Image (cartoon, rainbow, N blue to C red):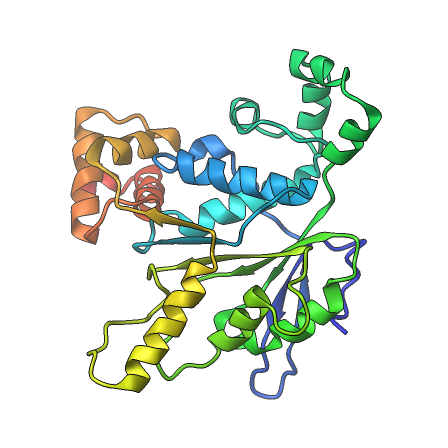
Length: 301
């Protein structure tokens, strides 16, 4: 139904209908690999998502995940980085987050090979064959679905629930108004109905709003209260809900330096001034400053 061969395709994104073009799944072939060490100030969030994803691939208990917070604070980029890591490295065994952080991937499964020769792996070899088999990770596949196309979720689920892969459905920038009922397809997938929730599917989402509600509404009607309650109930279905916040000044400078810029006193002040002009200190603004600095414009801003 999806027109995607998941034996050959690691990830795909749904392209909706547009001016005569019929919608469909587009296979993703070009991935951006980002070392986890490049993310400053959000290590805890990334480690939680990494561990949750690894548990999912091992068949252990795992949760749907929501990253929420202000724009540009690294919600989407960090979530993509974790997913891309598992897609491209395709690890066969569980690897501690600290090990990945210390040794950025250079080639697929290089961590698996490195970990296999470590003392931890030698100790693990004393376990039973059953224990070793249960620790093997299933392959991950990712399907990105935009908010405006959530109504296709039930059909996607029908197509993947029997496949021998673990699927993460990635929904970026979710937010719903009170009269927007597109969330109901997502609610059905997460809560189940007569048909049980698929065991090989998790939802990973980002939002600027903690409870996915687009804006505040006056508590003046039963309809308003019911709609708000439904959206809050939906957000509660994300067992992992982690907030992202604006960086402190020192964290912002550390992030700029991690991108290869030597922050002399003048460069430091220029970076902070740029963040002030933009109205926030976040990873997106740090990246913009680095581009301008490398282009010789940093000191002119």
